[in-house]
Figure 1: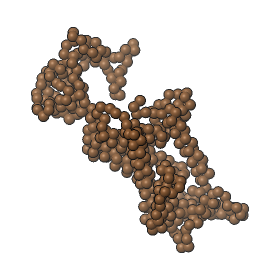
Figure 2 (figure 1 turned 45 degrees about the vertical axis):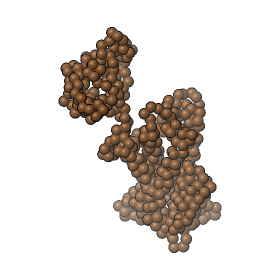
Figure 3 (figure 1 turned 180 degrees about the vertical axis):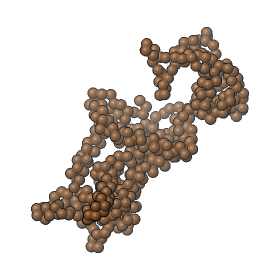
Figure 4 (figure 1 turned 90 degrees about the vertical axis):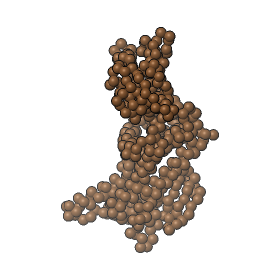
Amino acid sequence: MDFAIGVLILALGLVVSIALHEIGHLVPAKKFGVKVPQYMVGFGPTLWSRKIRGTEYGVKAIPLGGYVRLLGMYPPSRGVAAARARRDGRPTLVEEARRAALEELGPGEEHRAFYRLTVPRKLVVMLGGPVMNLLIAAVLLAVIVVGIGLPQFTSTLGAVQECVPADASRTECTDADPSSPGAAAGLRPGDEILRWGTTEVSAWDDISGAIADGGTGATTVVVDRDGERLTLQVTPQLTERPVVDKAGDAVVGPNGEPRTEPRPFVGIGPSFDLVRQPVTAVPGLVWDTFTGTVKVVATLPQRLVDVAQAAAGTEERQPGVVGLVGVGRFAGEIASVDGEGYGLVERSADMLSLLVSLNMALFVFNLIPLLPLDGGHIAGALWEGLRRRVARVRERPDPGPVDTARMLPLTYAVVAVMLGMSVLLAYADIVNPLSLTG
């Protein structure tokens, strides 16, 4: 039951994100006078609709997208194309698309066609949808970071090792092993370290840095234990400890054995908790999420090849790109998996993180400069602006709006590729799924 609730929560979040994406197109389009007959969330049969000020607002049965129908997306044919259409007598697919884009404009409404907007206004309308997804991602990330917190090591002790094993590769204690410096000093799990030597502590890194720099001399440590402030004396011991890299993995020497080095050792470990961050941390995290998503989209062809091989059973599936089925599985796992210390707050943070990733993916993917994506119309508007600027500099006639209708054959090819990608990911998510729990 919890699994299904998680999937429903994600579906609702996705529908709201799509609805807001389309509002990002709708509001500026109506503001600039474009005729907008329809605003729909979903595809297929209409479940509910209402017409308000010339626009039909509605919800359709299949919540896998949405659209705003802007009239006049394609300009009427000019020059050679128009002459060919008149000569042949039968409109081509491109000409049919042009007529469909203009046929609902009534007499005197020609100025309400999208193609008549200035280049800056076209950019505002087409960027409105993706930018709305970016704003959603930023707001949700701010809720996570400022309101809930990011998972990180804290200055509160989660473990105090009982002894110092003679063998660095051994973790169990024996009667022959001496007590660890932390245990000998009286440190306990749950103690909050306030000061280590002369270092005022606010995070675990402060403690680990002070231990590494402090050597093996006796050190005064101030802790908070159940509201009581205690001062203890800790004397670190120089001990061979495993060398780890930045990812926390053991570094292996030439002989294949884990490398060790002598380091001051106390025998304490941090607790893991959600720590709230200042609002100033949000822009950097939004940027990191954006650049990470760009890297995924830039390597999408190779990732899809890997997914296809995994779906065929020839390769092990690696963590990476997933489809809606896989994202739904993640949401279900977040809602249903039991674990110590994994309560409602942690589940909420993970669910919001999932929605952050989806909205950032919608933002980046929609900026790809190919029709029917928003990026294709953005690219067309930028090209139109460049042509007009060049024409003014060269004192030539205005070349007019860019005829994006001529790109329809490529548009249909892109749609076919996107459908194929969706089918592949759905199949892979069913036969060889990824799991958050391993």
